[in-house]
Length: 112
Image (cartoon, one colour):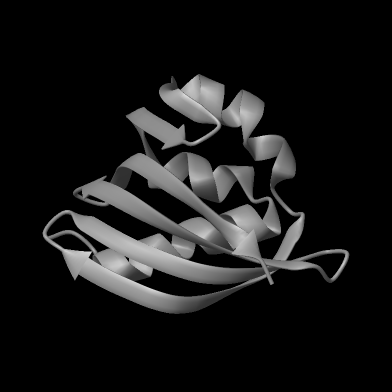
């Protein structure tokens, strides 16, 4: 039986905040895909690690405003605090298959 998807989603953000590559490697599927306004054509797993992972560890804290599970998806709105103290808010839709994240759709919010 798969783990609770909301807890899996939180684990993804914890791994990113801690720059824990081993943890994120275990959480995302080989067929993982990532889209955002900056990456509308999408990134595969390797592209995610090349483009996005260098920012891991620059966010000290994620505060979850909204966590909504709907089937295999979790809608997450968070407010994040960067290492320099600046803050921003985003919403993401994470898709899971079993205990592995297969997709991330990122919708940029605004600075707080």
